[in-house]
Each structure stands twice: as structure tokens, then as C-alpha cells.
Image 1 (cartoon, helix red, strand yellow):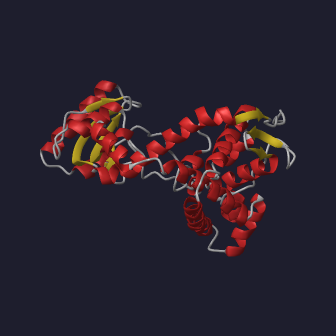
Image 2 (cartoon, helix red, strand yellow):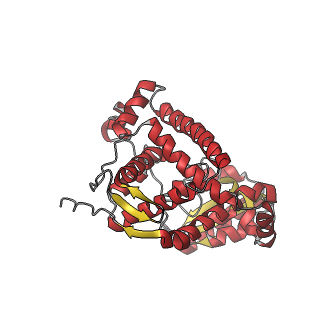
Image 3 (cartoon, one colour):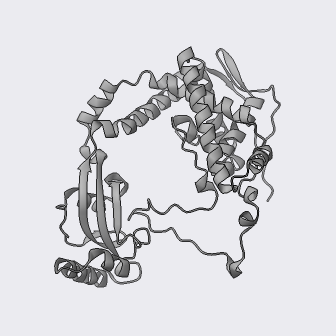
Length: 356
């Protein structure tokens, strides 16, 4: 199932504001991804969003119209109204700006995905007891302040600009809090059935590579601009130089073709090994700590690798990740089984045909 509305399944709501305003976060780039580049504005001119911070966050333009009281989804015991649905989409765009374009470009099937997930959230939230609802309200208030703080950091700490931004986006604080509380309450209902004992059993039975982190220093000799045999020859030369005592970090800064680790001397620190391509991951898991191994070939070229440190997360360290995975699984099962049986009618609006 497409998971477009990721906010619904994330208990801490990973507000992706910074990723929506043209700021690259390269510190997490891995050897598997070396496509990120950035170019300054031509002629040294400041882009429009630098002149007007509010321009970074345009209001979402919905590609459909629906009456406020129209039933977008009808289900046993209730309905999702047009007002609720459009408000939801505006709030999602406000909380996670990268979603804006996805919402604007949504076809009818994609809109149905949003409506399906929101309907599931409504139904789950309706099952929350007083304790879950109270906690959901508390969490939402705290999260709203977090979101506000992130926006203010981009708006020069100007409260009036933040108020104007919300006005431009067509949302109010009350609407945002209401939607966030609904999401948090639905999550609270699902979390209630996720027991630590079950997570412990899952941890004990899992491949420990899933919980392994490593600090790896590497030099990539790319085969994109040189022949494979030339890349291997250079990689072997670097292995020999490092074994003779030359500084790995200095050589990485001079020779590596990996922009994500060049400035750190080739170092990726305390990273989950599962994020890396198989060959690199295998070296990170098996290569003796502190030793430089033979060059490792991947689709990107040859890597000279030294594992600086490696450890397996304890259950306590891995528990939050395990709980998140269990939460997403439980949510998906609810959407695809029980919720589908509760829905009696879909009345998804048809988006207008975009101009050619």
C-alpha cells in the first residue's frame, strides 16, 4: 500500500520543514548515494525565497472542489466530510511542506489513498480512552511548539511572519492541533497493544545486522570517469600507502570521489549498516576493526575501507525502532482489513484536468 501520508504512522511526527526549503542535509549521505549536488544562483543573485522567507512556503492549491458537508467517505458509524478532508490536506502541507506538490498533483486514486488513511485515523482515534486523548492533546501542544520553532528559525524569529504564514496556508492553530491530536490519539490506540515482551522476542530472533552500527572511514575511487582497472590500481596503491602509515583522512580528502564524506576525511560515524549497498555493508560487518582491507567493489567503483568501530544496539537502544516497525505493521493491517470492511461508500472528488 502506498504510504503517502507518513505523518499518520509516525508517533513523533517527523516534521520535514527544513527539507522543504531548499536546504540540503548531506551529513547522512551514504556511499550508496552520491548524486547530491548544489549550485549557487546565477550571477550571485539571491533567490526569491531569500528575499521573502514566506515565499518558501506557498499555500497548497487543491486540484478539486468539494462541498463542506459532502461525504467523501461513508463508513459504519460516521463519515469523512469535504471540510474535514480539505482541512486535513492543508494541515499536512503545513506540517510537511514537501507533501504540498504531491497533494497538488494528486489524481483520484492518490486522493483516495489520503482519504483512506485519514478515515482509518478517525476510526482509530474514536476508540481512544480518556487517558489516550489527554496524552494526545499534550503531545500535540508540544509538537506544535516544535513546528512553530522550526518555522520561526527560518523567519528571523518573527512571530508576525509566522502568523502570516499560517494565514497564507489557510490553517489555524486550532485546526492544526485538532488534526495532530487525532493522529496522536490513533497512534495511542495502536501502541496500547504493542508489548515490550513481544518486542524483546522480535529482537532476540532478528538478524543482529539489523541493529548494527559502525563508524567507517573510506575512500571511493569512482569508475564513472576512469576505467575499472585504473580505479582498482589506484585503490590498491592507497591501501599500500595507508598500511605504511600515511594518514587515511588526509588521503580521503585528496582522493575520494564521495562528496558526502570528503570533508570528514571519508568518515561515516555511528551509521546503521543496513543503509549501505550490500558489498559495503558486508565489509562494515565483517572487516576487522582498525584494519584496512582489500578494495571493495560496488556499482560506484572501488572503496578503500577501514572500520573504526562497530557495535550491536542493545534491546533498549533498538526498542523505539522496533516499536515503530510494529506500529506501522499494525496500522497497515488495520487499514487493509478491518477499515476496508467498515467503509460503505467512497465519494472521492475528481481532480480537475490540469492545463496543458
